Length: 438
Image (cartoon, rainbow, N blue to C red; front, side, top):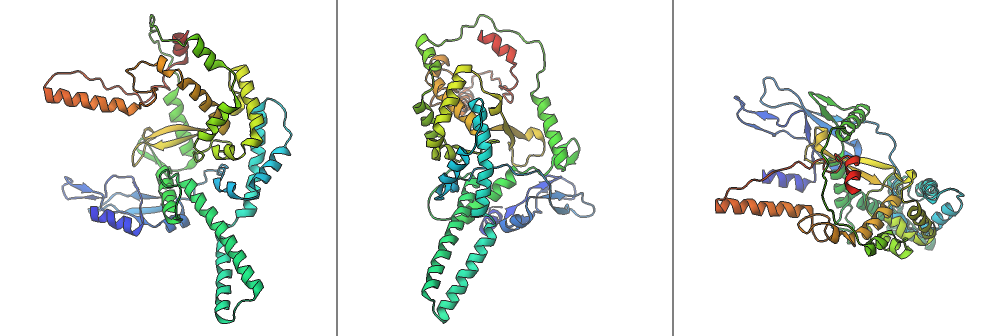
């Protein structure tokens, strides 16, 4: 098996997951089974045909299941706007942003003003990017052909001075587009351990293909039926999670007489003092600019680059938030994405939903988190493994393993309760929380 895996790696091919069955070969009495039959495709094939699915059908006289490869042309709707970090390297980028920002006249609460300005800027950047980087593959191909023609002419007849200049200009344009192409792959690959160094488009392209394959939902199992239609999958996902996280309205016991630690007067003043521009800017500088954006499409790389343009209005946003003590509804929009919890997810229980929030919401949340971090040690008990700086949830798992190992070696009896925390936060009723915090 190790040799076969090495074969797949050496050829740089992708082993497509199989739907319908777990195994494709069975011996005569059914006591042995294996996934012998596979469909291997190259990244270039995926580029041409997109996301596809492999189905294992029922077998008859053969001990192998026939496989069917289905290419998918499912329409999941328009792709959302995503800020491209490579735009920051363009000499005209800031000029385009400043023009697009200042030409908009929006009035109202600053949260609404910023939301509408980001929305207008999004369309301006999309149009600008089409002019600068549109038809990328076709333009690169044409540049390669033009450079090749000049190379051939230079070998046979020599180049005139203006042709030498033209060849240099073509190379400059070629490398500009190539760098944009690679930077786009780097950002889409979400590679965290390799961010600088030699160009390696093949590596990042493979990361993008693998990531798309892992995150794509081509079919879901509903009972004994498989659902493939995007419309039906959407309905199935919505119904599942609405029911999964809805309030149960059951009688729950109240926990009275618990003395929770409280913040001191000094800590309360620290938490509630007005926000400073330095405090906000510190969060912007320290935040990762390559995280997946929310509905607005902008990330922290944009905020870092355009801070001088945005800081005045962002300061007003924080002042208004401090005054009213709640987030405006216009900042509460988010994308819900499903992250697979297993290698081959078939049912919706195999996915974990996460929210992708807009950049302004995340900025406010991060500033508040930094403030809370200063007082958490006095609020959270020392025997907890989460919400304490330097500790992680998995630390508790490590300790439990040590306790179990000690009990086994010492021969002592012990009682261990394994509690399912799948919905630990989402299943807690707001009424219960408000009662406990009074």
